[in-house]
Length: 178
Picture 1 (cartoon, rainbow, N blue to C red):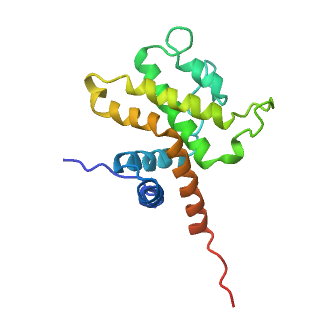
Picture 2 (spheres, helix red, strand yellow):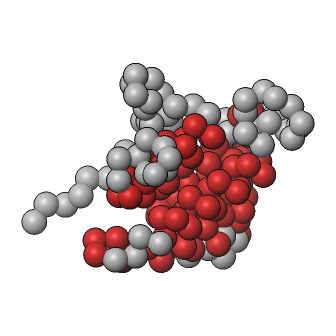
């Protein structure tokens, strides 16, 4: 039997996420574990914009990501591809909203190309909900988790913002006072 090797940062992220998700917000360990693994995934080079267009360029705009997930009017080759892309979009929006506030457009009337928080929430919840609807065969066991992620999406963002602050304090401790 082969033991699944965890990411070297997983204990670090798991502790920070557990403190905010379970300790402060009352979210369960399944969500905590999922989000800690997601942070590990996004810590890898090139993983933030892993969706590619037809010319193999990274897709960086949220609207283009959603279009790429559509198997009928977009570029997803199948409904299984839609699920994969929507899972990524849910993860991406959660990560961006919770860990990268500087990447969010604060002015809903601006045309900066950056998503607003309300856009991230709408698309993230919708994406996780779509993934939760793939609830048969090999996806049956994990479908409920994505339904939970959709229903507590805003709490997950808040928990990541708390974890981000705690992680920042861990790697940048205050100077001792003399």
